[in-house]
Length: 343
Image (cartoon, rainbow, N blue to C red; front, side, top):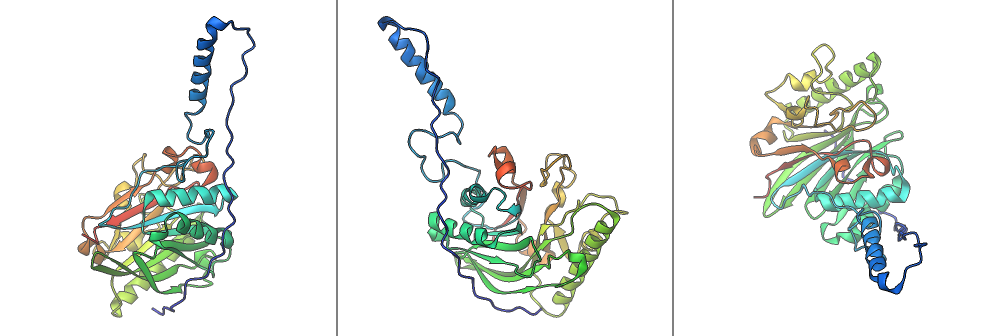
C-alpha cells in the first residue's frame, strides 16, 4: 500500500447563516369582552401560545440557546471509538439549513469518525467543519475530502482530539467499476486514555441502481477490494481494516444475485457488522421512496473483532427524532459502530 502523508487543508471561514426565527401570533379576538371576562381572555391567549410553542422548530420570543433546535440521542461514549458511515445526499441538500442541521447532529451524536459520501460542494463541507469547531473547540474537528472523485465526493470528518490521520491514498483511480468514486484509504491512529489503535479506514461509495450492469460493477468492485486487502495483509501490512460506506446493495440477497460473496464467504477473515441487522424490516438505512433497505454497511477484518469483541452497531434513526431530517439532511440514515478501545 502506498500512502502519502497529506496535510489537513485550510478551511474557509464560514458565513454565519442563522436560521430565521419568527413568533407565531394568535388571531385577534373579534367578540367584545366585558371587564368581568378579561381573565378568561388572558387564559385563552396563554393556551394558544402554548399550543404553538410545542414544536421545537417553532421558536419563542427569544432566540433558543445554541443546539436547542435539534436534539438527537448520543451514540458516542468516553471509553469507545466510534465510526459511522453517512451518505449526506448531495451535501448540502438545503444549503445553510443543511449545514446547521448536520452540525447539530454531529455534535449531539458525539461520534469520533464519520465516513461521508455525496459531498457536492467543497466549500460547504469546510464551512461545516469550521462550524463544528465553533461549538465544540475541544474536539478539534478536521476533515478530509477525496479530491479524485468526479462529482459526489467521499471523505471523513473526525475529532483530532482522538484521531490522527497518518497518511492517505486513493485506490483504483479511473476504474470503471467504481463509478468515478475511487475508494479513499486513510491510515489512522486513535489515541485516548493511554490506549492506541492503529488501523486503515477505506471509504467507499459503490455504483447505484439495480440493473444487471449496475450489479456487475458492484460485484467487480467488491472482488477488487477483497483482493486488495488480502494482498495487503499477506504482504505484512497491519491487518486491521475497516471498510465503511454506501455499498448500494443488500447483504441478505440470495446467492445468485448477492454481490458481497468474497467478503461474506470468507468468515475466517472478515465480518460485516451490519449483517445481524440485514433483513430486519425495521433496520434500514435508505429512507427515500418505497425502496427502504439497509445498503450502508461497515466491514471489519477479523483481527479487529478479536481485539474488541464487545463492539456494537446500529442504524441511527435520526428521521424519527428530527422531523425535517429527510427534507433538509439526507435520504440515508447513518450507520455507526463503536469499539471498546479506551477502557
